[in-house]
Image (tube, rainbow, N blue to C red; front, side):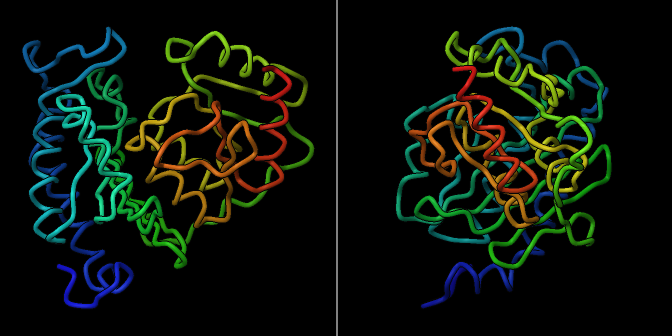
Length: 281
């Protein structure tokens, strides 16, 4: 817990490993036993056939909500499934209390299909500022951590996003067309030009990890849900990358962003992608 007069940074210095342990335990208890073992009654649709939820999502989020709240009394949890049940709970991101932003299974469609490309995302923020993030891909046995001002690692190895090679096309993961408005579709068409190789994204959290590792040059996403982006934004930023909205401003987890937005390996690439998106719009 945060002791009297202790800052979030001091809390993290003592308890970041405990957060990682809680995430690993949640995955071991509630996610991996159901991977490739889901029964039909354990999978439901939310907004449509591409928006799925499983018992693993629900139970892992409950596990993390209890564990993270116990680690940091006075904090609140904004989880994807809890917000689906009560949309007003999302407003806590804009409050003064420390907030855990949780996506228990990012890439539920992949999880349901038996594809290992899914992950658990947790970020800790306060007043709209991201302080730490954890990205765990249990089926791939990969764990990435970012602490504000202290860098990012994956499996204990420091991450550096680097810069794209000037002699090859930019590899960019983009929003699935099903999740874009007509205006956003026009903006994304700006990426269909020489020197750019766009493709539909998979798990957002794993796409952010790919940017932080320098395996992907950028993303171009058209939705704001903080549980999909918070962990990855800090991960890429601490690896030396940058993020910009269509308005040329950094993405705000509190909302009100001009979309689409990009997260890229370096600032120059972020500006280039926003320029292409602006041209499409």
